[in-house]
Structure formats: structure tokens, C-alpha cells
Amino acid sequence: MKILNQSIKKATISVVIVMGFLSQSLYSQEKLEYKLQNPITAEYLKKNLRKQSPRLILNKQIEKNLRKKLKTDPLIQNIYETIKLNAGLVLEKDLITVDIPDNPNSQKNQLGISRDFLHRMNMLAMVYRIEKDSEILQRINDEVIASSNFPTWNPRHFLDVGEMSLAIALALDCTAGDLPKTTIALAKNALIEKGIKPSWPEDGTTPGWVNNTNNWNQVCNAGMIAASIAVAEIEPELAAKTIYRSIEGMNNALREYAPDGAYPEGPIYWGYGTQFSVVTAAMFESAFGTDFGLADFPGFKESAVYAMLTVSPTNRLYSYADCNENAEGYGNFTLSWFAAKTGNKTFLNEKYFLTPPAQIKNFSRLAGAGLVWTSQFTETETTPLPTAWKGDGANPIVVFTGGKDDPNGFYFGGKGGRGTVNHGNMDGGSFIFELNGVRWSIDPGNQGYGPLERAGFNLWASCQECDRWKLLTKNNFGHSTISVNNQLHVVDGKAEIIQFKDGEQPEATIDLTPTFAGQLKSATRRFVKESPVSLLIEDEIEISDETRWITWQLLTQADAEIVEGGAILRQDGKSLKLENLSHPGFTVSVISLDPPPLVLDKTIENLKRLELRIPAWKVENGKTSIKVRLSEE
Image (tube, rainbow, N blue to C red; front, side, top):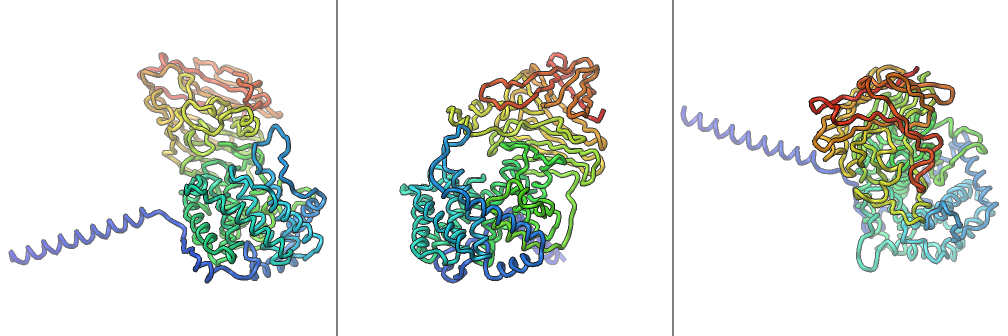
């Protein structure tokens, strides 16, 4: 019996060890980061790269489907007519030149030229592909010769090279050998000497954009992949090592979409960066028959929901980070790719694509590729957007809406994050709020980079005392959040969404404690959609010995009348009530920000900051709760 018990004991221990090993193994598997497949070698290119052009965006099968849709689908026909219209406008212009316009608002680079050229090639090349018009081919030839003969494509600002390389690669691909051999040779040599080789510095270093986490990664790697595929037959080793490096580097930018699709740089840069990741996936699929796992990257497909939810009922963007309120039309083509991949008709903007060609605004410079993605859509579902959504990640946000047919136009966007995120601001805890067609609480949005750079302003460094935080659009004094002791937020103190609940009264809580390290002991901000026409903002604050003042802020362009218990805001014939529910003994004050504090600040008409200032000596037992309701009057 004793021997039996010992045997059982040993067996039990063995089972525990095995189970522990399996558990640890499974845990390790879960912790493994998703990565793109990367089998690229010169030998792989030789065996797997499609030999026949076109092979970037289009291939024989994809083109067959596109031509079928052009005969039967009014939406595809209308997009193509818009492309033809734009191609006609290109024919009326002078040939592309390297001359940078003397514009005080422009940056000191060639990016505008590269973008113009990408637009020209998308329009002209697609029309030529469909119609084989000799006049169009001649213009493509002249444009490609002109751009290939530029002294450089400005590798110091590699975005310029990325977009130019993609444009020339697409032009060569769509014309599929119909250009003169001398032009093809010139263009391929330019792709090698002015595109790919400058991406391999002679000192052996790796350019920052290859592995960084922002839109530069997406744009520049897309350009290098396109160029490498275009020259793969004549420079297989260079092409292979460049594509391999790009696939490895792209993982870093794609990880930023996880876990929910909230793009850290804001909706404008989602439109910019994502369209180049999408074009990369499309190039891989058409050229190799696989996207190497790009579409399935965690959070990537989900970002289509993010992109749609950051557009308010007034068709303005949630303008956080370096982002303006104006929604960009080119994002619609990127969403077409997501529609094609998911079968979800919600992502297909039929209204935009069926607009008369002459009236379509902000037409994408990748519209040729976008036409192809849109033609690949087959509906399998129509899933409505959620009315309450949160996205975690490097720059987390939360959105509440009233739904598609909301008569009140309720829209709220709030955020956490930190200033050191790419294109980030000191705006943790900030929010925008729309009701009845009016944006009552605003984010000041972006301001032009050119004038700031030309003035010698260091816009891109993000240390605690850096120039960037002097600007109202970048610091916490220009956002609807909290400020303490009239100090800047802690630049690397990340505010996280720690609680979220959907339903008829959705709510979200953001932990702002890291944002105020050294200024407060703790702070949380809770947003609640109390009703279809009201929003509650509730801040729980514990002060420290360093705390002197707590300032609750709301940025608005509305006229403000201070009344007992709060204020009445009026704009566009509508009104909104601001109720100070927690501190009736304190009066809301109005600080005019038009004109703004600094000469270099962005001027926003009628901008003002409503403040509720609470001195620390009035806080009992070290804790206070600030409650404010915004509601239809």
C-alpha cells in the first residue's frame, strides 16, 4: 500500500510538471508577437514573383474582374469617369518639374512634387490601361522621363522618395512594356539610383524610417517595395534584400494598430499611413499571390471602424493629434479595401463614389489603385457601427454617438495618451462634443508645419521643455482637459482608459494620474452619456503638497454667457447649457484666445477657454470631485 501511494504521488508530480510545462508553453505561444511572413530571397523572387505585367495592384485575373465591373457597375463606372476627368486635367498642366513653389506655407522638401506625380500617374496610367490611348501613353512617357531626370528625389526627406518611387513603379507596371525601351531603362535606373540605393547609406546605418512606428515607415517601405518589384529582374539581390528589410520593418508600424485599431497619430494620419499599407498588401497579393499576413495583423482590419467613428455627424474629424477637422476624401478608397476584405458594406462609401465626377472633392492620388479595390468588393454583410467604442493602444480614445439616424447629432470623443506619441499633444483627458449640428467643445487641431519650420521653430522634439509645447494647439491649455498649477502636463505620463461600458448610457473612465505626476496624487476623468442630449464629465482628484490650483477647461468657439450655476453657450442659432454641479460657489470664467497667446499660434475665430478654477486650500480632506454637465438647453 505504501509503495502504491508513492507511485501515485510520483505520477501526480509528473502530471503537475507536464501540465505546468504545457501551461507555460501555451503562455509563451500567447506572448509571441504576430509577425509578417518573410520568405524573401533572390531565389524566392525568381520562383514566386509574377513574371507578366501588370503585377502591381492589377494582374490578369484582377483586371478581368475590373473590366467586367466597368461594363455593369454604375459605381465603378462613376469612379472611372472621375479618374478620366482628372487625367484630362493632368493633360492641361505643364510637365512635372523639380521646382519647389515659393510658398511661405510649404515645407522645405519635395513632398508636394512627389504627391502631385503620384496623382498624375494614378490617373493617366489607369486610363491608359483601360483604353490604350496613345496620347495618354505619350504624356506618361514625357512625365516619367522628366521625373527620372530630377537630380535627386530628395532622400534627406525620404517620404519624397517613397511616393516618387511608388509613382514611377506603377507607371511602368500599368503600361506593361508599351513605353519606349529607353524610357523603361531610364526609369528603372532612376528607381535603383535615386530610390533604392539612397535607402542603403554607404556608412551601413539603417535609416530611421525603416523600423520606426509612424507613417514614414508605411510610406517609405511601400515605395521601396514597389521599386524593388519593378527592378527585380535586373537587380534581384538588391530587390530581395530591400523587400526583406521592408517587410521586417513594417511590423513595427503595423503593431501600432493593436489591439483595437485606434491609430496613434490620429484620423488624418490613419488616412495617410494606412493607404500605403493597403497599397503594399495589394502589391504583394497581385505580385506574389499573398500579402504575407498583412491584412490579418492584429487591429489592422478593426481600424476601419476607428476611421469611420472618428468622423462626426457634421462630417468633421475628431481632430486630435496633428489633425484638422476637415475629413479627407481619399480615405474612402482605403476603406474600399477594407470593404473588399471583410465584405462589410458599411465601409463602402457609395454616396461619395456616386457623386457627379466634377463635384467629387479631395480625390485620392491613389484613385487608380482605389478603383481596383472598390471593384473587388462583394457584399457578405452590413454591420452597423457601434454607438459606443473604445480603442486602446499608444494613444487610446473613446467615442459615443447617437447612431446613424440620431436626430440630435450626438457625438463625443475623448482620449488618453501622452505627448511623446508620434504627432501627439498634451491632451490626455481632453474631449470634443457635438450636439444638434454644433461642435461645442473643440480640439484646436493641427497648424501648418511650413511657417513654423521656416521660423526656426523646433516642432518635432518632444522633451518636457521643448518648443512644441509652447503652442496652444499642442499644449494642455489649448484642450478641454484639466491643468494643475498652470503647468504643462507631464509629457511622457500616459493616461489610460481603465473602465468602459456600452449600452444606452455608455461611460468611460480615464486614469490621468501619470499625466499629473508631481502635481497631484491621483486623478481620474469619467465621461457618461446621460441621455440622448447630455454628457456628464466627472473628475475625481486627490491633491498633493505640490497642488496649488486645479483648472477645469473647455475650449469652444461659441458665444458664452455666464449664468448662475454655469454658462449658456450659443452658436449657429443653437444653445447648450453648461452646469457646474459640484462647485456652485465657484463661477465659470471666460478667457479669450482670439488672438492667440503667441504670434506663431494658430488663429481660430472666436476661440475661448471656459475655466472653473479651484484653489487647493478649498479642497477638504485632500480630495475633490468636479462634475460638469453639458446638455441641450
